[in-house]
Length: 119
Image (cartoon, rainbow, N blue to C red; front, side):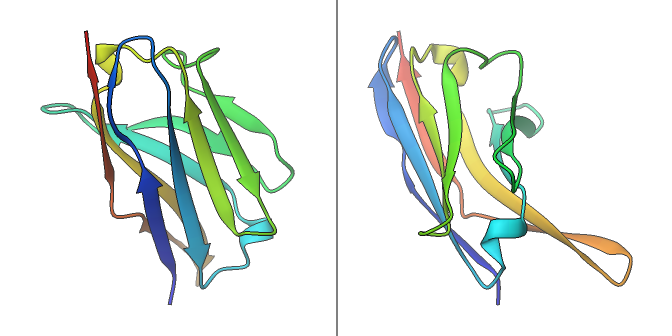
């Protein structure tokens, strides 16, 4: 059974920092790409950052230079370090991974973590 368990997040003032964690189980973590998404009220869920099995990272333009995605393969955990937060970063953040099963991609999601940034 695949499980993604998130921790971290909370409330912070603009300019502050928060870190999210996502611990995975039930998958061969080292070979899977891990993603962070977010969904703000009234908006579609969007990809924030992604890290491949060989540690290549990609970021949405809105967070480049402020957020850092990383992974610790000894702990099967992916992190999202968020610096210089602004109110537009307020959203529920989700970690995600996916695997191909019989030709179909299956998504696995964390439970979501609220991040609230006040001005």
